[in-house]
Amino acid sequence: IIVDTYGGYARHGGGAFSGKDPSKVDRSAAYATRWVAKNLVAAGAADR
Image 1 (spheres, rainbow, N blue to C red):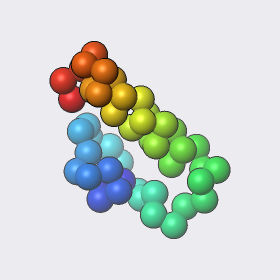
Image 2 (cartoon, rainbow, N blue to C red):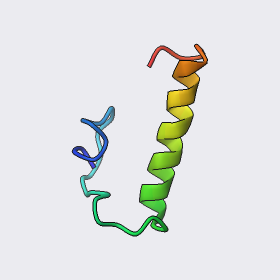
Image 3 (cartoon, one colour):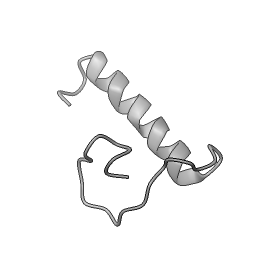
């Protein structure tokens, strides 16, 4: 996950998204969370 998420922001147990089916909840939830975070920053509601 460190590689797949560009370095990561918080500590975690490892793993990866590459090669996983999009229906896997860890992959889809991470992508959804990244989308929300990106839009919060774009809207000026957060710095990063």
